[in-house]
Length: 271
Image (cartoon, rainbow, N blue to C red; front, side, top):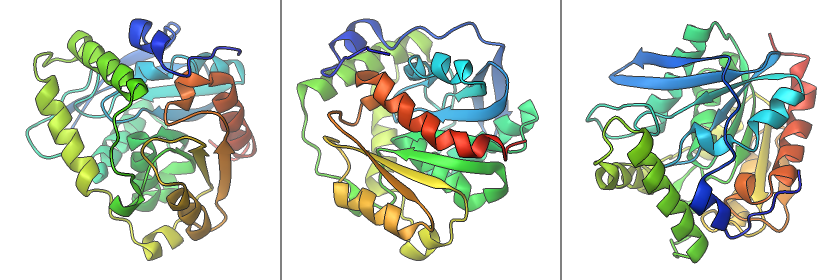
């Protein structure tokens, strides 16, 4: 895949690549939320978890590649994001991790590999700590596991383009299309104060983990990514050159190659 959208001009104008036709899609009611999902292809299950303020359609460059490689791809919109609703409680990563289990239960998926981007990575690793029996492995891209791992926010034109697309997509997909600003405030508060995983909690993780960091990530300190890779037993560290926090959109071929390398040894173990 030779697509390049380094400054997200294409994403801002058009969004990610359109998703293929889903094998099935729907909503799962869980703990005050109606959580949207869609599945594609057949094979070992891989759950893709999008970043904060985004939605499952942001994986449009990844779904076809994973289906072509023989995986059953499951997209889930985190509660309050995309087509999923939420109640009035503050966001927590633990609650969203429990939502993932509810969707897996509804689909009859006992165990899956997870590919998480930003907040989605945190949700996946939180689930690996809460219910490791449900997690075949975690590809953890572009997130922190305690507040010290985040850089001070510095707006850039690329970030602004991404935010503009998120606003448009929220208006088009959400059951509460006028509530984008309140949604952003609630998610931002979660990001500001969570997660708070200790070194001991990270050291207790027993599922395969790859920590992927982009060379130019706008949000995550590179030393924090190294810390995660050194603290989680057996974790691998992968540096993605020439890209930033938006690598799945900027250079899909590069990102997909790293994901497929992570998934290959797991696929034989999954049910």
